[in-house]
Each structure stands twice: as structure tokens, then as C-alpha cells.
Image (cartoon, rainbow over all chains, first blue to last red):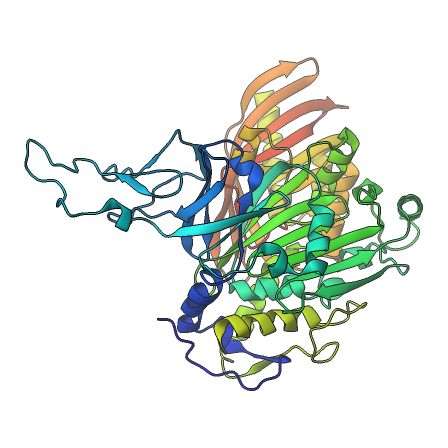
Length: 411
Length: 152
């Protein structure tokens, strides 16, 4: 089911047809071939399911999923669908069970691996009714995922042949992920952002290093554009994953420069009244001020100065998606660093100074291209390749996305 | 006191809904906290906010950014602010809790129930004017549609 209905115009990665955001059959093919295919989907934090029986519910594409810590200490995940009539097995975002999940509808029960182990009135009542003797519980159950954990993140896959996560990411992206997720994390809060666009428009936006200083005028308006900055983008060899980064000048010099600018605010253009917003700590010791990393198909790990967050991309139909934000710190944060994370959370999220535009721009494309399904969008900045580059004036990682997308979709 | 809180809330809502955002920081004391969060985060004691300002300067910066830097489709709010409950008083600080409802009106006329919740306030008399030392906006839902630009 779900065969793509239209052909791509050519072999180039520099042109993308607008029907990919508009075609319902193609969308359903994506759910099967990408999200339910041989990819690793981010599910939750390992600390969300720290104790045996502790669970969290989420999605792979549109498939509801239960993630739970087993009695054996392993993390298990299975489709959140009762084998009987298909009702949700777990009906809360998170919680804890003892040994079993029980569907509320007819009390069919499941162990922590998702095996069907109990059927209410299986033998009937007073010798009448009940399930046929030949009904085999082991043959019925929700689909089970394979899970893997990496740096406190839990990933799941439905395919038997998805490569180990380290191979899936490649050494370069793996190193960038380990750079941020290097210690036990603490959740500082969660929000959901509902976006009025196809999920791919958000992923492209996150991978698009070209738009950052153009769409997000905050740093420029307040003259916080740092000419000393360097940066670039790393793209995994298969194109699927990326990490973009900017390198700043030493932190102390930066903070002093911001404060100095603040003092001159009345004299000359716009200056921040309270420059503490940008007063950050070089917590990773490498002067990288900003790193945005994606793991195909649904994970973004963000470091914007001291603001760290996990963003999970969930498709919700052809023209809608949700972004699940989990803001994190580390368990050993100093009070000072924690306060910086809270202040710098203003930069990101649904109201973020350098991210609120990302909430609406996908919708602008979805609406702008409404009548252009046979036209092509242009993804040509920095040439036609997908190689890592030491500039951000490139769309290499967007082309990388389409390279991987077309491989998974077989188109 | 109840009357003064009602009056403050009425002025606060009119300033935002009439697009006089420059007046908005004036409802707060110089040292203040304004935070937008969700009921779920609040209940769990999770500290992060969608907006987090711990000085009046940060509120003024928010307004300046909305006016000069941030890009979002033209929209306005209509606040309906309920009656405050005075829930405590410690020294000079009065604590009040007030329910609100915000309808968002987009440029094409689309109206949505954008947010509901409660204001958890710490109020002080600041030279004869009642001002907010703290306003924690606890939204009933943690799900925000598209973006949050104009403050709640």
C-alpha cells in the first residue's frame, strides 16, 4: 500500500517538486517506508523510563507507541494498540505499572514486552462463552519495536535490518551528538508546538543553514551579529543526518562586548536593555555557541548557547505536525548555569527570539505553493552536492535530506 | 485591594489587545518575573517557560524584538480576564489568582481560542501604583498553535 503516485523530475537533488508536501498517497507511503521503515526514531529520554514499569507514550510517525522499562532493566517498546479491538493500551503520557498493562475496554492484558498474556473470561462464564480453545495468545499482539539507547536517548525501529545506531549516524554526527549529550540530563520542562505544515518543511528548515540570519533578524537587529564567528555544516555520508555549528569568540570577551553595547543603547540603534540574556558559559569548552543536529527522520538536538533542547518531529496528517520540545539541563548544573538556561530558553521554542519564525514559515510555504504541485522548489545554494562545508551559505544538508528521503522512498 | 487588582487586569488586557505593547512593561516593577508556562510543567515544578523574563528590561526587550526583529503574521488578541481571587498577603505583597481566556484573531479573520489559564500574581504598591512583581501565566494546555508572539 501507499505507492508514491508521481515521479521526480530528474536525478538532481537541487529541485524538489511541491507535490511532496501535498500528495496524500505519498504521505502514507512516507509513514510506511520512512517512519515504520529501517530508520531509528527518537522515542523518549532514558530517564523518562528509569524504573521497571515506568512508561511513556509517544509515536513513530502516526503509530502510537508505548515505551517501558522492563523488569530485566531493558527498554521495551510496542505499538499502543490492543490486539482485540485496537483500543489504546496506555491512555496517559506517562505513568507506572507493576507488571502488566491492561486495556480498559475488555481488560486484555500485556506484559512489559507487549506480549498478550491475559484475556478476561477467556474460558467464558459458567462453562459458556469464552474464546475458542485454539485461540493462541502468542499469535496476537501489538507490533513490537526494537529499541536502542544512546547517550540517554531511546530510539525505536520496526524494521529488522536497521543498522546499529552508531553505524546509522556515522562517526562525525555521533561525535557531535556525544558532545552535547555527555552527562545525565534533567528535564526542565516540556511544550508542544502545533505547526500548520507538512513535517518535511520543518526538517528542511532545521537543516537549512542559509535562512538563519535572513529570517531570524533578532541577532542582527540588536547588533549581536558576530563578525568573528566561524561555522559550518556536517552532513553524514548518506545525507540523512546533519550538524551545523557556529564558533564564537571567547566567552568573557563576548559578554563584556554585549554589556558595552547595552550601555550605548540610547545612542545608536537597538540594544538589549538587559544583556544578561546572552551572558553564556562555554560549558562544552570548545567555543561552539550554537549546534543544531538532526537524526533522520524525527529528532533535533539543539544547543543555542546554554539552552539545550530535544525536539521530536511528529507528523499529524499531510499538512500538520507537532513539535514536542523537551528542555534539558544536566543533573550537575550550578545554580548560575541553570538560570542561564532559563533565560536563554527565550531564544528558542514557540516564542523564541530566533525560532518563532520557524513556527510560521513552513505554513507560508504550505499555503504559498498550494497551487504549484507540478512546480519545483530550488535548493541550489552551495552547488548541488551534499558534502560537509565550512560555510553556512549552503543548502548541502537540505539536499542531504532529499538524498536520504529518495533512497528510503525508492524514488 | 480586590478593586485595584481588577483595575490593573483591565488596563493590562486593554494595553495588549489595543496593541499598546510599549505600555506592557509598565505594569511590572523594575525587578520582576514574568513567565509563560503550562499547568503540567507548573504542577511538576519544572522551571522553564515559553517566555521567561526576570527583569523589566527583559520585558522591554521582548517588546522591542516583536516590533523590530521578529516576523509573524499580523494578529491580535482579545483577552477576557475573570475575577481575581486574593489568595494571600505577606508583608507588602498581595497574592492573587485570576483566570483568563485569549482569542487570537488572524489577518484573514480566523478566530481561535488561543489560550486559557490563570495568572498567578504577586502584587505590590509601587509609589501609589499597584504593580506586578511577579506574573506567572499558567496555561491550561502545554500546546501552542504555530507561535507565541504577543504576550499573554
